[in-house]
Image 1 (cartoon, rainbow, N blue to C red):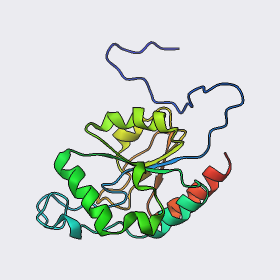
Image 2 (image 1 turned 180 degrees about the vertical axis):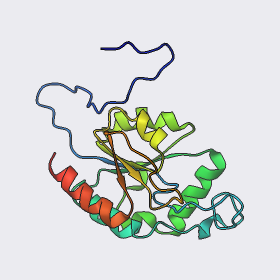
Image 3 (image 1 turned 30 degrees about the vertical axis):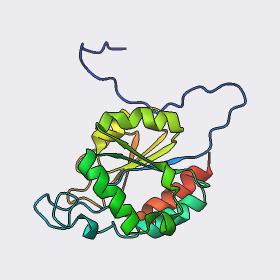
Length: 190
């Protein structure tokens, strides 16, 4: 087996931390905000989190219904929002979630919202929460999540989509209905 060059990151591999004999991990979903829950808009647009009307930023199509279904089953209330944001965008996100009645519409517990300042900091949050499934619109973020067994690249909230060949540890999805069907099957088999 070849040796890694100094400074190279290892290829991420799915692994679940050992928690002791008899321990059963329950399916737990983690979801990013920008590009997954909230549709991305350019920084210059008024209806982006960076514009003058952040509360008018549109949700991705189908997100509320999908998360309501997933929160109930198969994840049994174990759905967490994990987002990278600075203080201003965090405040805008919290205001948007309240304005949209996100928690009432999805069943996600308001205490299950977590913010980090760096993208790589999602990894220890996911490990601490025992997240088994994570949805993000950025492949680089998903690469950090080595303890998450099921990683999904969500392309519906972005302009780009999934370009090129993807690593075998990630699954690309292009809509909330497709993701809901996939997650229902994946999580139910655990």
